[in-house]
Amino acid sequence: MEKIIVQSHFHTGHRQLGYPGKCKWVHGHTWRGTVTVWCEMFPRDELDMALDFGDLKAVMRFLDHKMLVTEQDATFLDPELFEPDGVVLLNGRGPSVENVALHVWEQVVAHIRGKFPGHGITYSVEVLIQETDNNIFIVEKTVTI
Ligand SMILES: [Zn+2]
Picture 1: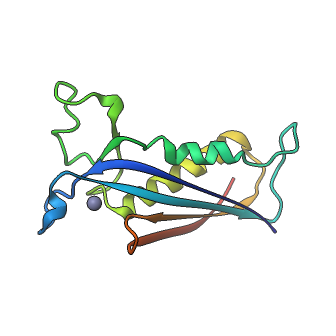
Picture 2 (picture 1 turned 90 degrees about the vertical axis):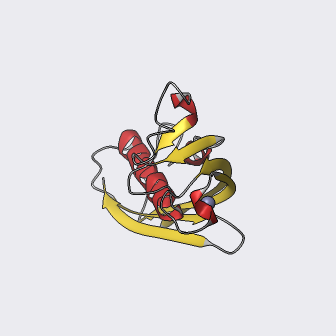
């Protein structure tokens, strides 16, 4: 078994529209993320590297200094009001820690698909996202690529 672990952090804004509390207002977090990918044996590139640590960190760093929204938040998706480059559209009904983790998971899988397509390898991908000192969400799923 081989395992790759990368950690990163990113600062974002978001708001939980419809939430019955202060989270419905725009606020920010410094999120901490850990991406762990494991499989029996990674494919290697021409330098005998499996997945590049920097590429996996870049998935999380892409979110840095962005506003995280879902399609319900039409205000931030209006290019007349906010620069689209500063907004990241997540799937789901709100920019919750759950949906941030799922977004990172999907982007990591897309990266693996792009780098090592069609090897028939089953990868386990775990994304741990820490929203605050006390609040953590983890998604772990397997995918065969
Ligand atoms: Zn929040």
